Length: 135
Image (cartoon, rainbow, N blue to C red; front, side, top):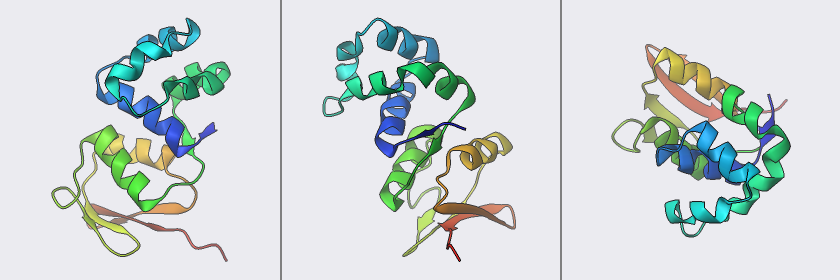
């Protein structure tokens, strides 16, 4: 699994959330036309996608793992990728997210991209995402 930064994931997932297909994202990057993507988020620098160009097809088709993920980043990606909203679809505790419902497909996808500093724990058909403690 190719590792990318949280910001790179934000760039990809913002475009997907706005309805762009993988092929459309690839076309903009390969043709060096990411400036046209600014309309989807005016404060993001989509030129960051150029750094991924050699691996972008694989990343878009097979997925990615985030190198390091903060709690706010995790909450943002759950919203962007699965339309899961804080307080409605899950709750945030001091160091974890709890009472999250995931489809089988979402669970599988989440296990792929979730950074190594977090772990997904299943508990009676609900999920928690908790810090992974290194020993």
